[in-house]
Length: 410
Image (cartoon, rainbow, N blue to C red; front, side, top):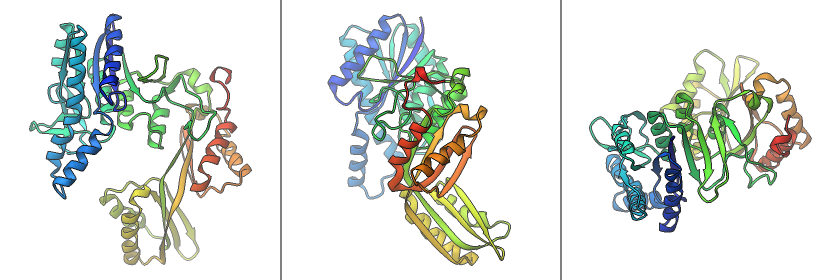
């Protein structure tokens, strides 16, 4: 007998028929002799509708009450699934986040999980029950309902799996696994049978939307095997797990792209200690994430300072940068929202040389200029003009042999 945590996303529980499909899948797992905990998202589109209602009711809805409102989406799906399973003859109990002892900090709308007691979940499992937990939510030390932000149900599921020391956490979604790249961009993209935590973290941070990044962080920290699967197919998906020797044989395991990028350049910046702090601290205080940074030194103790931010934040970042430029005596501020980031990822990079030169050669062959470059132990990223994104992805996918079937790679 094993202990399986299964998480189903919004499309998986989009209507009553789909919830019945989830119930049948859960029942099969239970009938196979496993203990089962199910974590559910709200029905697809529900969270957006609730947000729209709140904004119609009030121009600036109170954050605490927003969490109370948004938590009702998951409350609906867990109750419906429990009803259906009971009608099928199974013992099932639904729990909201606070009932499952999901304790978070008090950051409304973006709370972080501090602890999961899970004592009630364990008691119900010992009684032979199927336990159904509302994802995306918990409660703080004062008992206030909190939500974890977009994609928070993934984090809920992995955290609960870690607390229960589950054998596997299965993430059911509308895709059937993790692919070498976006199949909508490259028709030759193929599903990976396994991917390491570190590779998945890089993919999630670089634009891949299969798993929420905080859920992968939890999985790596507590060594929870995560199986990404389709809710609509029975075939195996992708295991996200600790890396092994076989994973290291593959130099590059995936290519990602992110078009939500923009760059800002402050030209003619005085080259003196503390100037980077003067530029970036106001950006950070505004809650804007800075990704890649390049500083190009010119003669006369002058430098050009370039950094990237999410395209959605370009207006605020540009306004702040212009103000800072005046304060420090920079010559001008330039912005470019028409860029994208393309990256190659693989744990095998740690033990293989020449990956960067191979990547650069492929970009050169396609006459694609690389505007900025950054690297980590298992990732190389470059900023390019947005219009070349798909071409770059396909070229890199072919260059690193990802077009070939997995079993033929060496």
